[in-house]
Amino acid sequence: MTVHDPAGGFRQHGPQQQVIFNRWELGTILSLYGRMVAAGEWRDYAMGFMREAATFSVFRRSAEHPLYRIEKRPKLRERQGQYSVIGMDGRILKRGHDLKTVLRVLERKLIRAVENG
Image 1 (cartoon, helix red, strand yellow):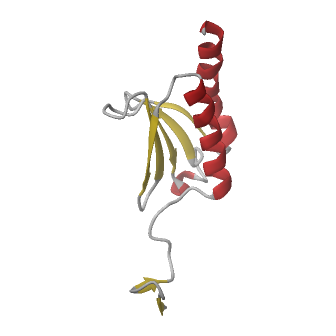
Image 2: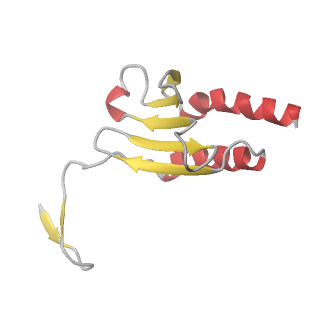
């Protein structure tokens, strides 16, 4: 079904064209991001929404490759889990079905940063 959009143009209703983070997921990720910024570990982020995955990338400086990528891939929901944390070198550091559990791999780095500081 095609519906006229008052903002101009037309929207397609039907299968979702891109994967996105919902409000709860984004809130959970941004909470961790804020704590890491306060600890001086992270300084910038970028989000990407594609057909297969949604990605939240974190950077120490904006002009370099991301330190970590937090990805949501719904097609892997029934297998290893739809959430994953990927390191700078492309290795999957943690994968699972629960976002908070997967993000704990980055929480450990926050604890170390606070202990050293």
